[in-house]
Length: 336
Image 1 (cartoon, rainbow, N blue to C red):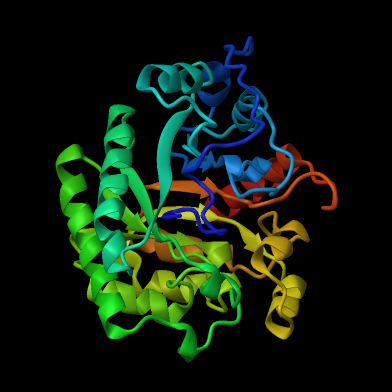
Image 2 (image 1 turned 135 degrees about the vertical axis):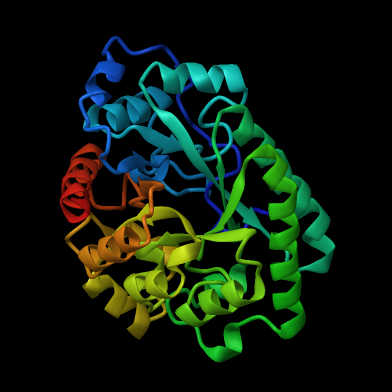
């Protein structure tokens, strides 16, 4: 089904999510107001708590638990997460986020522009999501290729034979440009997100997409962990495309797990469950180098912690709140 590849994780109904949406008793506004006004804007996405719509991904925490912990750690924003996790109506979403002093800062939007038969549905899907974002004062649509089973099977091990042909590249680039034109009147920018298991994963593929899309329309959401998973260097990518970065997803990647991915046929979902992504500073990503590049171009957008995990048996126990706090502190140090 369109937009429902095994990799897509943000826009399908979430099963087993607690429906409690009571306002917390803690004054999150007061807590978050203690951050310096000129501090980098740091948010956290629900996937950091294991919230994912992929079937059998793992245990899914409730809305209150996730949002309460995001605010308690000191983050001031979050992303939309899977449809059905946060309220779908603007008033309900504003209520649950506003009660905790959180802004909506982005939403992941997987699209299949590669297939000519899917382009119209992809466009409608993206525009509909942009309308929802605009209604909540959010200005970033994080667009991505939706991937498929073929690319998912070689995530982290992509070769030249696994890429798009010229017609597919043209359809993808043209579709993204058209989506960006449709989103612009809404005040929403399109930032493209390279992702493991999709057709824009490697450094070469990122460069190709940037070359094929208008710089004034299609920006870049650099995801530090996914660039590393695809064999790339986030600092090098950021340096080449610094002027187009509109959004940043933060995660570190385990060098040991990446080596295993390269040497075996380990699938992406299993690699994530076994700890492919780790707290900031525990992996291979050069965050100091990235911070220097972004500071050099005056980047003032959001940094979104997106530490993908899987929870429950058979995966190792994790404490998402502790992971998030560690990553927040280390990221702040890198950005200082």
